[in-house]
Figure 1 (cartoon, rainbow over the protein chains, first blue to last red):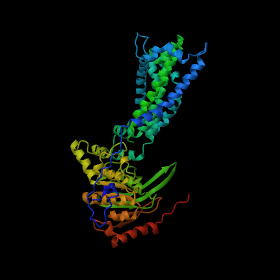
Figure 2: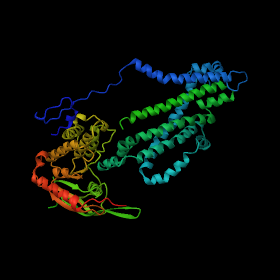
Figure 3: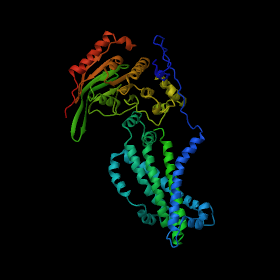
Figure 4: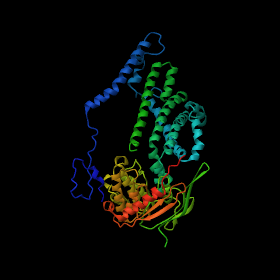
Amino acid sequence: MTATARKAQPVSEATPLTEPVTKTATVVALPKPMRSTFRPQAILAAAARNIVPPLIVVLLILAVWEIACSHPGASLPAPSQIWTDSADLISSPFFNNGPQDIGLAWRVLISLERVAIGFGLAAFVGVILGAVVGQSVWAMRGLDPIFQVLRTVPPLAWLPLSLAAFRDSNPSAIFVIFITSIWPVIINTAVGVRNIPDDYRNIARVLRLNHLEFFFRIMIPAAAPYIFTGLRIGVGLSWLAIVAAEMLTGGVGIGFFIWDAWNSSRLSDIIVALVYIGVTGFILDKLVAFVGTIVTRSN
Amino acid sequence: MTSYLKIDHIDKSFERGGVRTDVLKDVSLTIEKGEFVSIIGHSGCGKSTLLNLIAGLTRVTSGAILLGNTEVNAPGPERAVVFQNHSLLPWLTVYENVNLAVSKVFSGRKSKAEKHDWVMHNLDLVQMAHAKDKRPAEISGGMKQRVGIARALAMEPKILLLDEPFGALDALTRAHLQDAVMEIHARLGNTMIMITHDVDEAVLLSDRIVMMTNGPAARIGEVLDVPIPRPRDRIALSADRTYLKSREAVLKFLYERHRFVEAAE
């Protein structure tokens, strides 16, 4: 019989004290915040703020580069030279003229497929291992020092061992991605799990949630912001690792393309490939961050 | 006749780095079905520890706690807890928070439709049905605590444990919630134990007030009966003789006989 929602009433409607107080609570729906109203001017202005400055800087860099490298005997190609050498790579990323003559977008996709498998495995195993390490003091004491040592090993240092173990370049490259990107996932998940408030744990104990229910209903959502931080670092590292690994293992990925171009002195192609790699890495990072904000929005 | 909840000569001590700290010493208390008992004491006297022991969240060092005829040695939904800071899961809506408890406690016992009705029934009890699709971050502190109470009630507990449930709320919201709890108690006849440090709250709500001495090794100093008939009305009570006498008794205990002295360390 309490008047719970009375405070939601507008203040201007101050009722005189003499009026009999009704015992039912009325709920006044607040107007929803204005969202996604289409205002072309605002969108244009925002686009201008975000796109014009980097565009100017890129043009400046290209101009300086052109001036620095356009004299005869320059060791690196100038932008205009790159355009004449590699216009096909830039303008048509999806051409396909046989096994080793394909557009850069195909190569990037092939590399991305390896990343997807390696990083997917790392995310899965990393979250589970991180949960164990975060949850159990003994697992942490036993495993954490090992993780701390292993995570400093550079990606390519794993490659010979992995080639020896798998005797094939493709699984070796995937393993290198896995082993590179798993550490930040483990460590961040463990920190997230360790930081789950005692109250949530007590709720789980009062409700007698079993381990599986606790993992899915409490642990994963509570640690989600930490987990996604780890995943974001991990995906960046795996993109770093794949290019390096492919340069050594061969195949059709973007990393091997660079190595191949270097062996045939196609410097312009290498520069175009670098741009592809950079843009792809940027998109990967934003993609994981975007998924993270969607998943953790309610926290 | 055995009593509903029996706390039988319990001691609780914590050990840390080889140093043993006695928190509770020889605490005995019996509570009858349907009773509302408040536990009051200065901060650090171990009243929250006592509640955690009843909840089963921590284990007694010696002695025993019996609910009905079973010994309490682990937490469970028959001793639902309303936590001080509501502890709703922020990624679930109000409905989902209550439903988490309902679907776990009544799994296999209620059909899907029955569970839904039971969730809504409990949200209605605390007048929060209108906010069922809101997340905890979108509702006020008092509303969160209401949902916390609904979640605890939805477990159909044998005993409801309230750990300073209104401590973090402003005075007006607190009064509303006290009324809500009184009404629920009158309607459902739950057995409730509430931890508080608010003398007025204790006198208004309780059938009995358990006063704890200061720690370390706190014990029950005194148990006060509050023979005020229900339903109680806070405005009428402010001039009631029994109310004022009870209030005075608690104040005297807390501020004359067991003054809180900050430990000089």
